[in-house]
Amino acid sequence: MADLQLMIDAARRAMVNVLELKPTDRVLVVQDPQCWKCSQAFLAAAEAEGCPTTAYVLPEEGRPLKTMPDDMAAMVENQDVVINVMSGSSDEVPFRVEWLNLIEGLGLRIGHSPNIQEDMMDGGPMDVDYGQMVRRAESLMDALEGAVSVHITAPAGSDFSLDMTGRRFVTDVKITEEERGVNLPCGEIYAAPVEDGAEGVVVADGSIGGEGPPPSPVSLTLKAGRVETVHCADEAWQKRITELLDIDDGARVIAELGIGLNPGARLVGFMLEDEKAYRTIHVAFGSNEGMPGGVNVSATHIDYLVTMPTMTARFADGSERVILRDGDILP
Image 1 (cartoon, rainbow, N blue to C red):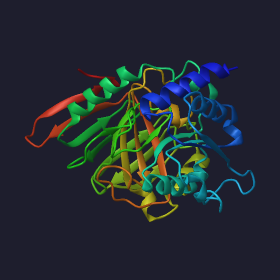
Image 2 (image 1 turned 180 degrees about the vertical axis):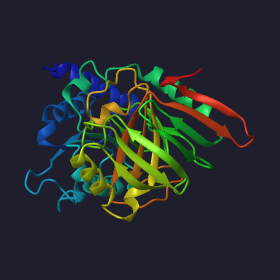
Image 3 (image 1 turned 180 degrees about the horizontal axis):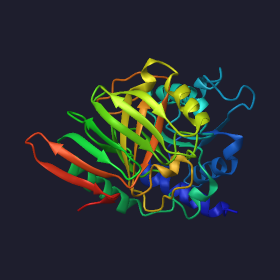
Image 4 (image 1 turned 120 degrees about the horizontal axis):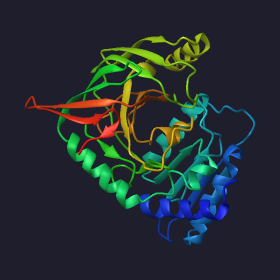
């Protein structure tokens, strides 16, 4: 059982280091019964920092939520920081996208924690050296500065290319004026690829969105930035992934490329932590309007994890650089 005081300490360090929490900040914590102890840790951490706090409890009726509850939008009035401690169900992605679009549009600082687990806050990916993560993220972003494309392969069968022209990488390890929302736990760099510039095959052998790890790898064939076909040896999973990709017309469009760099992150079956782990990359399809350059509109955003990738970046002058080899970040 996770130690509550250690969870509070981890939450406080994360909010201070990543969200630049100050005692004058007014903090709203969105609570979900499924993540209750974690939400209490965030509330206690904000209070320990001297912040005025407000809690909003998501209703249990009507789950999975497809849209925001009627009284939810009013809760952000006069707030500075919002911490979302909630279920990570794939069926609730449209609700979460709607809520995030609202609070991001208000310029609030956001810690987003769908499906957070207690052990992520007690000895896990929130109990890390944040200064070290910032330095690693900056080094990796420097290496990818100016890349016009990346080619990614992996042992499970991934072999695809993404057009990155004009799309720069950012990180969630430190809040900025431009990037006001981050995951907690954090630990990745990410970018929005050019929406019609994805070609090849992505084979997800790790977690997928809020679904967890598939019983058999899921293969997505990409053409001109869209998922054309889905294949999985497990018919139920193939049907489920197809349903998620058919929520609306934008749900099949490439949205994100991310690289995990949190030294405390493990592969535990929850995307919130898995996508931050070393030796993984993830691609997402759906909404990317909140990322630099992103223009795709969708009610959903689903991540697909690829383990042990090799990534080669190509630059405008024709030069190439291997960024990852078998998952390892190269100097």
